[in-house]
Length: 420
Image (cartoon, rainbow, N blue to C red; front, side):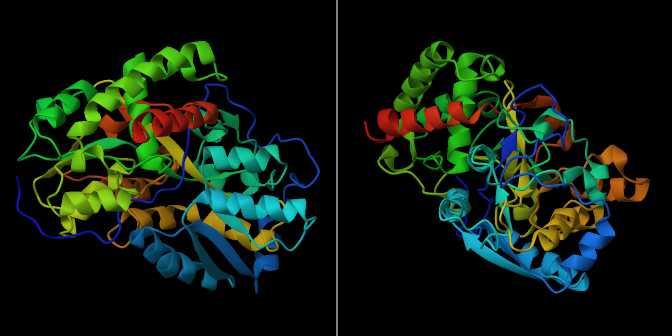
């Protein structure tokens, strides 16, 4: 085992992410008008920018990641100020808090002047807003920065199986991987879920994952579920109990068998991903799963993690998806929110975000749409000897499944693993 006492203050943003839930590509901005949701797309973005001047945009978002917070309150806030808009980050611990606030205002009849101007959101929470006609739609394709993404890409056109239909703006692309200490694990231990579990059982206490519904913990459970079922393909449609049940039962059994070999014997689970990274940085564990593969190299280069850190993807694949920003139907400052969404998706913001002062995320931008200089900048920033190359991540990525499967797995994990 390595000797290290350094701790990380915060690591991986738990937000919330969406994914390639379906190969069905809906028309990006084809959402029909419905009360309190869709609105006519702005024809002139310059007019939107002009109307946004003087506004204060309340961005409700997960606030548990110091890297993300620094990027938002540094680069993003400064750039918004240049556009005449004040950015106010409102930190929350879970995106569900934002959804509940918006839905509460809708129930109370507050259809204008809402508290939330824009939010960083994932699939199941987006589904709650969209199904309640509580999200603003129809503007995404009109944003100048939308030309840098293919809005028909399955993972962008569908969020955990639900068509986005111009109601969310893609921001980040994330992929999962295994982070490990190369002095403790061999490459052969990282090739499959089975190999990792065999290693963990032979080295009790040196592996763990956060408790779902933490998004990384939930991803860890889905990774085992996909491995058990032979991949996610049979779960890409609507929820099918007959297909789900046998795979879920086997998944639960595997996790039950693993539990005694987890950190602290599985008697307790970390509450969030930052806690898991602290355990690794403090030499309490030797391996963990991440949903932010692009941040591993940064953490090593900053001295947070040891130089023996490496990452890998299982032969069966790694889960990947996109995260979005969304504007509630009753947002008080829709123009400012659109300006923010457009800025976040812009190439300069993506380059800053991927750099040393950024959050370390991979942008949702399609690199083929960029000029050669910006494309090469992003490609270089994505390289690190400590993490899996982007090309390998892309070639192994498997899609997410519908939110009903996610919810069912989280429930079954809680009742059959945590509480058993």
